Image (cartoon, rainbow, N blue to C red):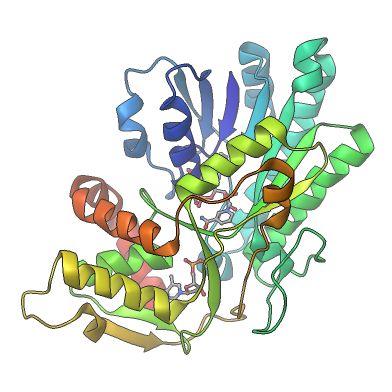
Length: 352
Ligand code: NAD
Ligand code: TYD
């Protein structure tokens, strides 16, 4: 068994689907609070798979975590659970501090206690894998080299500050208690089952429903884009072979401006599902008020994980974004399930 937290969210669910896609893979206990970002419909195909055990709960619930660890004796924990959206962290940071900092602290305490109670092989090989973000490193200028694992932490948003704090806790548990941890810091993920509050799915869905495609500021902010399937393979690699106490940057080697990303999506949609009036989806691009404190550029140097563990992403941005657009065209039922009242409230609050 392994214990996955936040496995009903975008990356966690993709990870579970990939993992259990291997018929000989061990089972997963999936602990998720089912916030607005958690969606069990994503895991529908596992309904009859006894290797997936879903538990509705909070990483901040000590008693529940202790009970789950005792009952299932996992050989590893992968912590995906988090509040993950920068714009929401600007409107309401409290939940981010609670889950990302206090929740991670709680999980570490319970997991460390459990690990101390183990003996033999399972104790030797146990791993706590913490999933984090490149946003902890702050913002780069156009000419700065990409982030390496040696960059100092300079988080700028409530979200990135809360993730940075969680990374520090994980590091401290290794140094102080010799708790066996690895941390990965990845760039912007995209792919199937992505909640449409983030740029790529939001733009695809807005384009298809004839709504504006909102670009913050001048659209020249740069992000590195990592296909979620590649991220999942990187996590498997680091979990299996990563050195304890180390951090690994995971990136797609795909730096793009936001405007380029949106234009690429429009081009693919023009080809796969042309607008009824024959015009390009680019006509829907609208420049809107910038995000406060908007980081200008993130870029990941993923050289360490390639040199030391032999991992490189399989997708280019062109192949990954085409698969992603096609996935959203092919999955209207999943989309209908997430575009609920609370999602519409968020759009109203953020985009007026
Ligand atoms: P997500 O917001 O889609 O999913 C988060 C999941 O965690 C949801 O299912 C939610 O219900 C669950 N959750 C929230 N609070 C919880 C709690 N207190 N207890 C248990 N479950 C809880 O996020 P994601 O995009 O899948 O991101 C997963 C992880 O990867 C996060 O730690 C995030 O910081 C990190 N990350 C994401 C990206 C990205 O581009 N999406 C990039 C870098 C790092
Ligand atoms: P997002 O997907 O929210 O991820 P993050 O903030 O974690 O990088 O945003 C990606 C980029 O797209 C970021 O620079 C903000 C920008 N953006 C827009 O321009 N318009 C939007 O409507 C959204 C949601 C994001």
